[in-house]
Length: 194
Image (cartoon, rainbow, N blue to C red; front, side, top):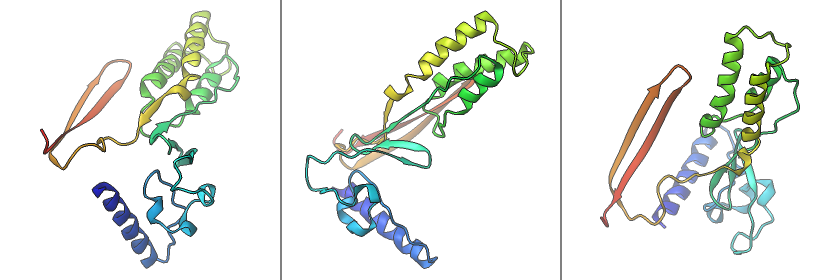
């Protein structure tokens, strides 16, 4: 409940700050603070929903290119693999169409980028047909990329059931190889109940 109170306070403060600059902050969409925000300030897609009802199903919304499933409070992903010619240009077009600013899909997308990189290294021309072995690699990668819609990443990194936090640590790990660079951050929290 304390986290909800803090979230509502942040929303109210943000509205006040924007108002000082003559900017109206509105079209709110959230999985938990909407009950504290006037209905007139909600996003159009949810203005007519009864948020007090347990039967409300919130859809997947998009903000700044990132899809968020409000019902489950998780990030979702889409990738529409268009039928492109089996050329370097076609591979690049499909790889570049995946928008992942938070890097959640990097392990899957890296495979496609490595295929593209090897094509460049081997001197493949833009509209030259793929070599048979590269075509097989790309076909497998494209099949994997078409399954991106099954990936869901929880948005909240601190579980709601934790009590007041007494320790918060951020751990970073990174490594590099000839085919990629990886970085991962972990948040370690300990509440007062431990």
